[in-house]
Image 1 (cartoon, rainbow, N blue to C red):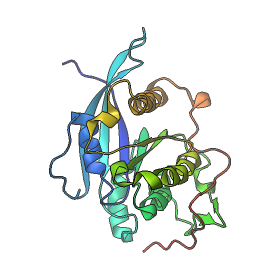
Image 2 (cartoon, rainbow, N blue to C red; image 1 turned 180 degrees about the horizontal axis):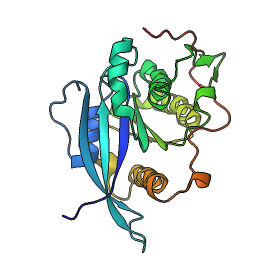
Image 3 (cartoon, rainbow, N blue to C red; image 1 turned 120 degrees about the vertical axis):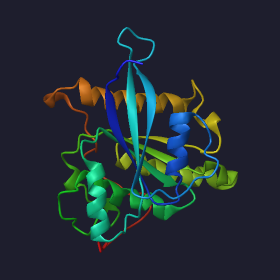
Length: 236
């Protein structure tokens, strides 16, 4: 196969949310039988047809960088992780729909990745409003993916998905909710598959086609956190 242009997409989220299973499903279209903890970073590649079915169609490699660890890690661990955050073209933020804390921590993961050279303020959410000042210049496309949808009882599903919709809105990102053990959630032609393709197209456009004055904003003007108030986040 001829050499293809490529883009780099980070896959971030707490340990145990299913990032490795998600990446395997995205790249191999198969369920990962025995997922294990990711140490450092694992990279897999997905082949994506940009603007499929149009005259502009072109094939690209999507490098998915599955970053391991905990958002509350010591400073030395965060410094080591920072090397993975260079030259990033897109970010997939992954949370466990059954674990509200993993959803809240996406703000901290995004802060770490997008502002790796800045000193964290220590306060991300106050009185329900997300402190977005450190993200004002972000231009990196984002996608929010919720896992373990199958583990939410039907009677609770509406409540949970309503809450997580605010999360996606905060990041000005599209949202996909799925079960990583069931490929049908990303079946060709499904709404999730369309959202995923649209996200990868956006990442490619930002990397190869958009000029400085016509970039895709990463965050909206207002920030809202639907899960309540989160204060005084301490960094070790």
